[in-house]
Image (cartoon, rainbow over all chains, first blue to last red; front, top):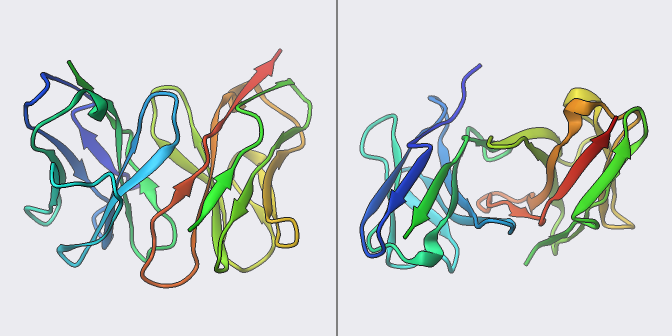
Length: 112
Length: 115
């Protein structure tokens, strides 16, 4: 069964460094998302991406964040200058029609 | 704006007992509703979804949920708990309209199953 994959599973970085989190959505899906879950808190929407552009973003998704679909398979989330409060589990999701979102296993980001 | 409230951050049941996890939602437009399960160190797996068809929805692993518009609820049930059901469960809502597909999640309910 097709699934969403994410790499790396765990990323440790120093505050102020740039990180890129990578996702490979399900191959025929058209809508892509990033969510994050700070430890002990709810899963929060960050951004959605369709037709090579951002379709929605939350107030969390500020200028430090960017997304890209550099080729036909990858979907990336870049954080330009990480802060301590960016430490969280980041989930990628994809969907074909916007109905059901399929989530990847997540990348745990630790900012020191 | 939408919101989801999950009553009980932690629920414990005995193996073989009924599982009931509560979810209430708030939405200004007809909602689509979802339950996801998260096993330790894993991602979110879809259990079931309501997308305006039958109000009683059956999902994987014997779970079901009933959409009750009058109560703005979408509670998750399973008649008989199994040890493998121990996980965290998230209720989520999104607009049924086109163009707004972001999910709004509840805080989650951690289910423990006692042998």
